[in-house]
Image (cartoon, rainbow, N blue to C red; front, side, top):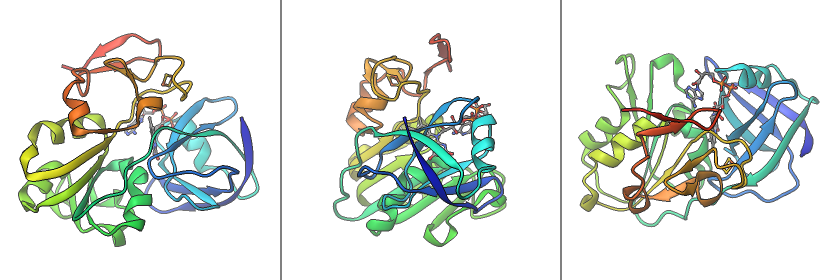
Length: 245
Ligand SMILES: Cc1cc2nc3c(=O)[nH]c(=O)nc-3n(C[C@H](O)[C@H](O)[C@H](O)COP(=O)(O)OP(=O)(O)OC[C@H]3O[C@@H](n4cnc5c(N)ncnc54)[C@H](O)[C@@H]3O)c2cc1C
Ligand code: FES
């Protein structure tokens, strides 16, 4: 476990925050840190800006993220990593499809490689990184397309050589099932699963024998074809398998 002194804390949306701090290792697009909040727990966080001071971008939804959001410049932040594989560099015409906090993982690519950014959220009040987004969907129709970001992407009928997808697993499963595979080049997904060790030991993130923390988090479309637990089974903190449908 390492620690660093926080350089800045910014509130950039309703419950959305960015924390920046310096780390002593190189980090690449798609990788994550395990961030420890003493007395609460350790959680995985994508690195949304790769250059020091690096940034994590998150929604304060539970105890750990709420405690993080209350931290101030100069406070110590504890972390391990970076862990996980990386996104490949995009080739040709590129699209980014993000749901909710999934946009954090895609930000390093979005800022380095031009492409169309599709972003879905519950309601207009949740929008962040507005200046980077080309196509917006909201569940309640308060901004952009009314519905989910996958249906928006399909409705636009644009052709892409590379597509990157990150969001809640049901959203990525819907994308994987609905998309006409023949119309796109490479499609990459970054999976979010319950993680404890982050380094391939505890098995809490496993999906059909793949350990998301070490073999992923980035998988291509064809790898997901052979994971029948993708979008259908998740793990409880105890390790018990929970069937989603
Ligand atoms: C590899 C990886 C990278 C991640 N990167 C980010 C990131 O960059 N930014 C970020 O905000 N989150 C990210 N997450 C998710 C993040 O780890 C969770 O938000 C975190 O576990 C919440 O912890 P908590 O203790 O605050 O909330 P918890 O107490 O664990 O959860 C509170 C409530 O929110 C629900 N919940 C948990 N996670 C989510 C979610 N992502 N969306 C909606 N509801 C949720 C829970 O089911 C629960 O009901 C990542 C997850 C993984 C696996
Ligand atoms: S989190 Fe422990 S094996 Fe992936």
